[in-house]
Image (tube, rainbow, N blue to C red; front, side, top):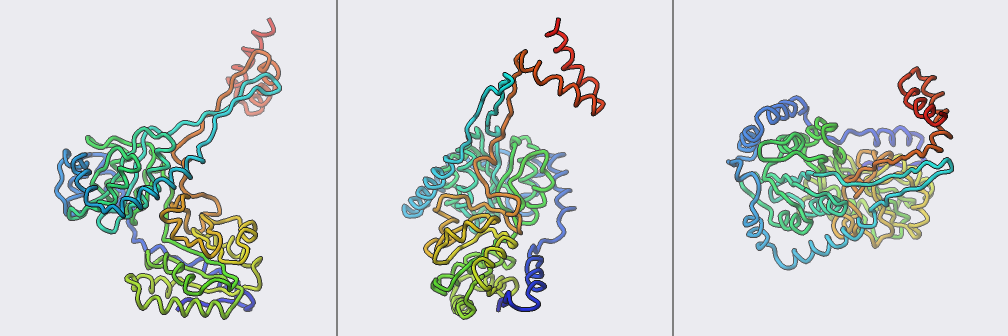
Length: 433
C-alpha cells in the first residue's frame, strides 16, 4: 500500500519532507567503470567500441557493420504493420507541428545611442540521440528527440540504439526514418556516449547528446558534458495527480499506474481534497494491479514510493505541487485552467480528466522528455531550443562609441584591466582628432 498523508496531521510536514527526500535512484556506483570505458574509447576508438559491444550486447560487429545500411533499415521497416505505421506518422505530424511553433526569431534594432544590436539563432551542427535497445526500446522517444532537432535545422542527426543479441525493434528504425535521422548505429551503453562525444574512426563526433538510458548511460552523459552538450540527467518517472473527487477513481488509478509500470523506482502521487475519494482510488489501484502485465514492477513502485495526500483545499494542493515539482502533473478537477494558473513548477501539465498523461507520451504534441527529481523547479522539457544556440550581435557607429565608450573606459579602470580601456580609448582619440 502507498503512504497516506493528511495536511491536517501534526506530523504532516515531517512526513511530507521525508516523501520529497526519498531516494528513488537505484543506481550502482558506476562512475569509475564509466570513466574507464570513456578513456578506452578515446584511446582505441572503434576497436574499444566493438570489444565492449561484444562483451555487453553479445554482438560481433565490424566497423563496416556498426551502422545500419539503408537496405537493412528498409527491410526492418517493412515488418511494421500499417496500423503501427499510421500511429507513428500521426504522432510525428503532431510533434512536428507543435515544435515548429517553438522556433525563435532573429532580431536586430538600433538603440538610442545609434548602436545596432541583436541576436541570431543557429542550430548545432550535429546531434546524437541515445535510444535504449532491444524489444523494450521506445519508438516514441525517437520521435520526441529527433523531431525537435530536425525542426531546429540540425544538419546531421545520429542515433545509437544497441541491439543486444542482435534483437532489433523495427518500430524504432521506422520512427527514425519518419523523423529524418541520418545515421543509426547499433551500439549502446557508455561506449556509445563516448563515441558520440569524442568520435571514433567510424562515428563522427556530435555537438549535443540527448535521450534516456540506464545508470551507465547517465554517468557517461555527466562525464562528457562540457565536451558536448546534453539534455538532462533523467531520473525515474513520476506523476502527480490532483483531484477534487469528481474524476472516476479507476481512471486515476490507471493514470497513476501508467508511470509506476515504467520502473520499480518510479513515483505516483495523488493529492485530493476528498479523503474517501483517495481511498477509492487506492482500492481501484489494488484491483488493477491484479491484472496488469507489469504488475510486479508497478506494484513495487506503488508500495515503496506511492502516496495519497489529503489536503484542505485546492490552493493547498497547488502549494504542495510546487514543492514536489513533478515531471507529469494531471489536474483532474472541475476547473483545471484556474488551478493551473496557481502552479509554477511542473514539467508538463495535463488539464482535465479527459487528458491522461499517456496522451502526452505519444500523440499530444508537447515533448515527453521532461525534468524529474524536482528539477522542474529550474529546468524545462526538451524543445527545439535545446538544439539551437543564440549568438548576440553588436555594431557601434562612431557616434554610438562616442556616447557610451567613456563609461566602458571607467568600468575597465575600476577592474584594473588596462588593455580593455585602452582598446576603447584608442578609438575615441581617433574620433577627437
